[in-house]
Length: 174
Ligand SMILES: CC(C)(COP(=O)(O)OP(=O)(O)OC[C@H]1O[C@@H](n2cnc3c(N)ncnc32)[C@H](O)[C@@H]1OP(=O)(O)O)[C@@H](O)C(=O)NCCC(=O)NCCS
Image (cartoon, rainbow, N blue to C red; front, top):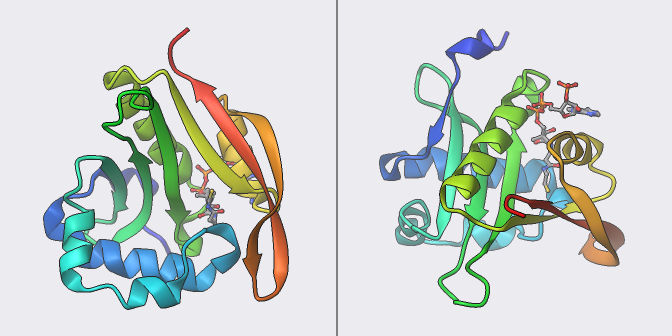
């Protein structure tokens, strides 16, 4: 039985949590391969040094949902760039809540935190790409004002099956 959602903390993932982050990323890719561009086989081969660097990357702000024992049960990342022509854009990535913790507004709390981060950075907009079959994710993004600006057939190919993605954006400033 999942704990009371009010006991789950949503906060920036601390670099000291890199092992919990690695564990959740690999679980996410193993259990929902059709929802993400990366592959568990590639990420399982990454060294611990790379995992540690990922949670310390200032251009990849990672929010985590932690249960009272410190374990991570959800996450969402906002990727930014120093490239002058694109530093007004944040890209939402790695949106995931462990199945046993879903429907408790953790996804919404994580996305609200990412939007607040983008607003604090004065980003102009947030972009993301989502496989159209991921109905919960599409509903979550739509509920927070993301709108589809493009459709990409066959954006992913997983086990020989093609998946269509919607590219969505939310303006943070006029
Ligand atoms: C998308 C995901 C992160 C949502 O996590 P969650 O914690 O269950 O979401 P929430 O409880 O915060 O729900 C927020 C909103 O999403 C929608 N939603 C959630 N689950 C849904 C479902 N199964 N079907 C339809 N809408 C759903 C609802 O609009 C909900 O708003 P409500 O509470 O007013 O009904 C989670 O389902 C997940 O990890 N999915 C698999 C990975 C994935 O698809 N990631 C996206 C990659 S782009």
